[in-house]
Image (tube, rainbow, N blue to C red; front, side, top):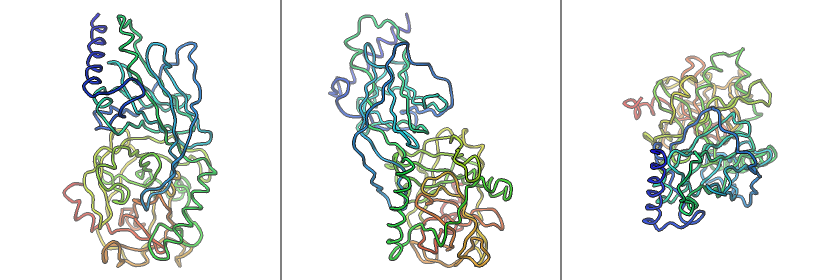
Length: 440
């Protein structure tokens, strides 16, 4: 009885908010705001989920339209925005929807409306429910918000969205309950293999042109990068350091790299990847996105968390420091320490990174360096300001922005990679640390 009363009170509260905000019936009106961590109540976990109800129809949702625009220099294109339409709700409405994009690397679902009864929730998962993300309702944000709300991406080309409800007797409130429910209006989905190849070719062409007058991430000579797992036996320290490096998925369609700095919940990337709080509402951070075998195709299922708070940022030194949600899930991947000195010319380096959003790779060899290893070309190099950078011929690509540059002498981070043009370059960590010493 108490549960039923709570449901009635919850419905009344939602409808009162709807009336106050002038919202219309299901599928119309303003989309919900992204909100804070507490408001959106996104939980990333691998967990069991209920099966669809008997006789339920699970059909593909057709996709229309695309927008593959890369909005920020230094970020790589990860995928496309696609229009979609599916409605989940109560009474006679569907309780699940399947969105399929054959060959896509991931599928990320957007909700323009999210009005659920108290205690009810959604899950977004892969078809086998090996990766499950729970989303709790937020009546206030759904009615009064304006920006919509993204779910965490699901790895693979299919996302299953399910509404989990108590299915209790609603005391004849069918008309009111019919106004509640969930509307999916679009998805972002990762590139297919042919699209990735085309995007990479296009990206490199643009960057080669830009490098004539500017500085962009560049492969210098032949590409010497290798999967991080290739160093598991031969360079175990290098491999372990790569575990602290994460792929960033920004706005569902763009990429950068970030890494854990120190033991606390703090990560570093470039300012040109995340520059202000308005860009933090839909940034995923993927740890352990690595190939299982050297040169293989199987990839570990990544551990995904949200960017939580932008702690501080600096355009001249091109860094942003931020925290993530569910920090306990990623602590096991370790962290990197800082090398607070100007490196010597010729000092050997390596760069763990996610070039073009690929599973973790390491640039450690270079056919542009005399000894065949990445090394400091110039320790007195200009970045956005005079004498802020070191330069090197380590291979990088779009999406590598924000990667740590480590000294092979100390296995600590000596620079923050941000651009190049052959040579590429990174901001010296002893300069960045002067801005961060009280925060780390």
